[in-house]
Image 1 (cartoon, helix red, strand yellow):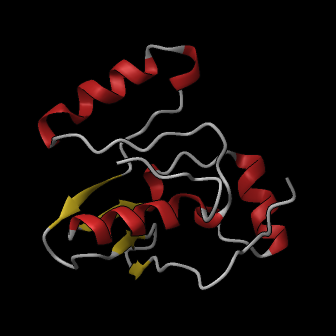
Image 2 (image 1 turned 90 degrees about the vertical axis):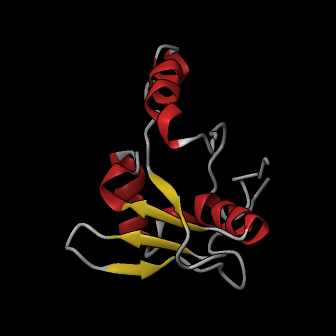
Length: 121
């Protein structure tokens, strides 16, 4: 399953996949490879980086036992240096994406009803 992350970002893509597969997706906030300039711009503008368009990125769902090898293989390529294991599929919360925050909380990462940042191209 592939989803375009240029519309709605990672959050929208994961919500679509979770709903279609009837699984929950649990993300770890600290594992998300958000570049410092992106985080700073989002903070200044009041955007959630999970919903910002991502050009040239990939989300892969692989088996638990293959995950580390998949990340290692991606990182072996210069364009995959930022590859990271950001979460896992769970039985709880089918169709939802949940985020474990850096302060120990958990929040639902919903689909936005509209675009956080309209496309200009």
